[in-house]
Image 1: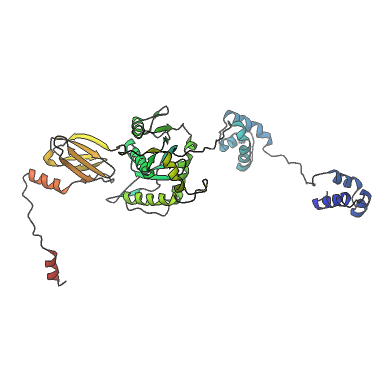
Image 2 (image 1 turned 120 degrees about the horizontal axis):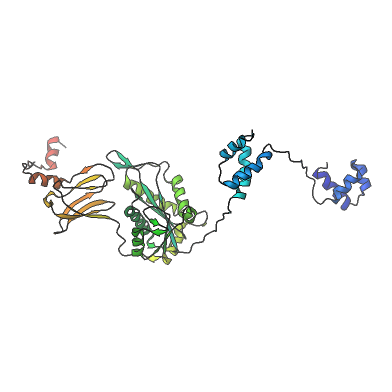
Length: 398
C-alpha cells in the first residue's frame, strides 16, 4: 500500500513535472495500475481494517428491547439480564454501548439559552453548609443560607437562617434584597415546601411578601432546576470557594464572613459576562422596583398570658418574663436578633433578650430574677460596698 508521502510525490511528478506513468513505474518499481489508481484518487491513502466483530453483537437486539421498555434502565441491570442469556463480557463494553444507543430511546431534550433584561428577575435557593455552625454554650447547629442572584448583573447575596419555615426564609430573602438596594420585578423559587402551596401556586406567606413589595413571583416546574441556573452556579461556587478552610465563631461571624465573601465574589470577573457583576448592578437597580420605606415584616408574633412560672418558650429555649405582669396579656415578638415582650394593656416592657440559637436553655434576665425574689418575700440581697478602683491601686502600690 502507498503511504501518503509517496502518493503525493507521484502526483507532483506527473501533474507538475509531466513525468509519464511508464517512467514513474520504472523509477518506483510500482505497477502502472497502482500508479494510475494513485493519480485518480483525490484523497490520500488511508489504511482501513475491516472491523472485528464484538462479543456483544449477539446481544444488541436484547439491549434494544430492554431500553425500549425502560430507557433509564441502569447498566448493572442490563448486564445481569445479558448474563442470563450467556454473555460473559465485562462492564466497560456494555456501558460504552449503552452510552451510544441510550439517547435513541430517550425523548430528545435541549435547552434554550436565556438572556435576562436589567431588573427582570432574582433567583433564590437554599444551601445547607456541610458543617454545623457554633451557636454558643458548647453547641453546634445545622444552618441554611438563603442565596439570591440577580439574572442580569449576576450580583449575589446570602443570609444565614436556622430553619426552613416561611418566616425565616422570607427574612433571608428580604435581607438579600436590601443588599441589592431595590426589588426585581419577579422572584424565582423552586418548589420549596414553605414557598409552594401546590400546583405551582405560592403559599400565602410568599404571595403576601411579594404583594407588599409590588413584585411578581414564579414557582418552577418539578425537576426544572436549570431554570434557576444563575443561583445554582453561585451556590456551587460558594461550596468550593467560601466554605473550605474556614472556621466560624458563631452565627454573626458566619454572616460577616459570608458578606465579605460576596463583596469579593461580586467584584471578580464573571466568566460568562466577561466583566464584573458589580459593574452591571447600577443598570439592574435602575430597572428594578424602588425599595420600600418599610420592608415586609417576617417576625414571629404571639399573644400569651404571663404564666405564674414567668417564662415563654421560643425554639426549645425558655426566656424569662417580668413576674410582676403575671396573669396579664403580652405580645411576644421573635426576630433573628432578639426576643421581646410588651404588655398589651399598658405598653410596659415585659422582656428583652438576645436570641440564642442554641437549644434547651433557660435564659433569665437579672432584673426578672430579682423581681421574682422580692415577690416571694425572700430577704433582699445585701448591699455590697462599691469602692473606687483608685483605692485598690493604692493598696497594691500600683
